[in-house]
Amino acid sequence: MTSAQQASDDIRFMGRAIALAKARMGQTWPNPAVGCVIVRDGVVVAEAATAPGGRPHAEEQAVPSAGDKARDATAYVTMEPCGARSSGRTSCSNFLMDAGIARVVVAAVDPSPFAAGRGVERLRKAGLQVETGLLAPDAAVLYEGYLHRVETGRPLVRISDDGEGFDARFAASPKADLTTELNRLGEAGYTRLWVGPGELADALKSQGLLTV
Image 1 (cartoon, rainbow, N blue to C red):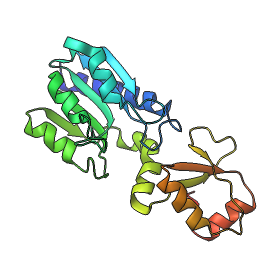
Image 2 (image 1 turned 120 degrees about the vertical axis):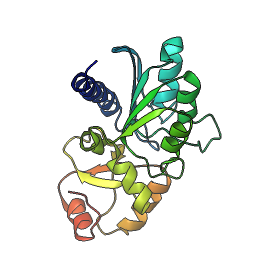
Image 3 (image 1 turned 90 degrees about the vertical axis):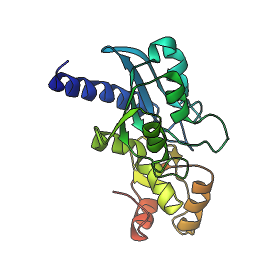
């Protein structure tokens, strides 16, 4: 396969992983929606996205589905496979390593304490070829709320007409302590909330709590 063909295939398969994840947006909090596509000899042998409720993760679904075909395959993952799990269960990086995956292509690096480069480092130390950043701008929408919560402790809030792809609607009095309300929802695991145009949106905007 030529390098041009490989690059074209990489974009196509990562695009598929991003599409899988986008279809689950709003359903997987407190975890981000992640897509995983496993490809061997140019053929998709398994694919999955984070399950509703945040578990199982995409990799821990796709790897068993691929079975023996995962060996020497390439995994396209929209976010860095976790290097550790808060539950203590097998990490996604270990799932890929144990399956014999040869190459991992990642769109976005995960800054959470359970990844933060550790997943990528673990895979490389195990001898896997790892590439990061492919279609990162396209994957950014998947993780903007998750990253916002990691950085601020609060879910991201945006104006929306229908709330599609959001975790929930933010319903509070415009006169309430909105920062406290959002911190509470962040602690509960929410990452992306929506409000309709109006007084509440105006109050959030005036306090720098609305993402535009």
